[in-house]
Length: 253
Image 1 (cartoon, one colour):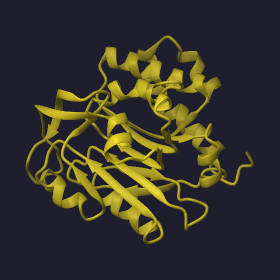
Image 2 (tube, helix red, strand yellow):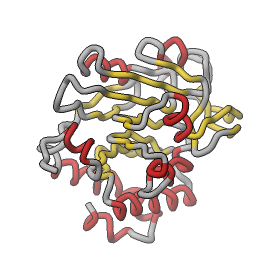
Image 3 (cartoon, one colour):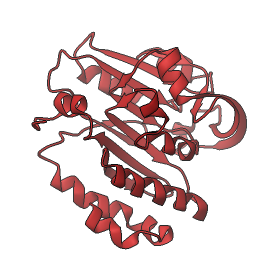
Image 4 (cartoon, rainbow, N blue to C red):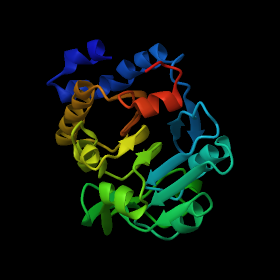
């Protein structure tokens, strides 16, 4: 991947339209190592690798539910009964609460890099998926620091999957994922995560560029399964963690 992406280092504007093509090449390289399963939501696909040992426990986090739990329902059905625990957080209570409680525990706040009140893009209260379009509006909501949520609220230090769809808060969360960042300082391991990167302007394209090159420099996560439109969806796997590699691949560590 590094050879393909390196020509765009320092030029986030040129990198943006090339990302899907660059990353798709890498998908083919690892297809015999990472056994991706796709789980469809109403308007997108989430990726997850099932554990080699079906009896092992799984902790799945949804950060941003968006009135849609089809992917989580699929994951729960694919995992052996009784082995998974799902936790979902969304600042919008109506709809999300009832939906998510079908698969796991629901928390009525957003997820970000610090606790407080932030302006986010919130999904309007309507059956948008029946209209084939989603309507979002700016709203001030309560958000909780990701580390505090994992460590102090749900009390989980090893996370098998996080589904990030946090309506622009992903840019604030990105630095938490760096080597020696706050997740490391809290001794929290994330094996897999899906992230949706929303509508980057030039400044956010720079943030995304810096994030991806830092991820490559750290050599912890590799990223795959790019889908690009106005947004960018990516899947990440933690190759640095022996625990994650043993649990999800047949690689020898």
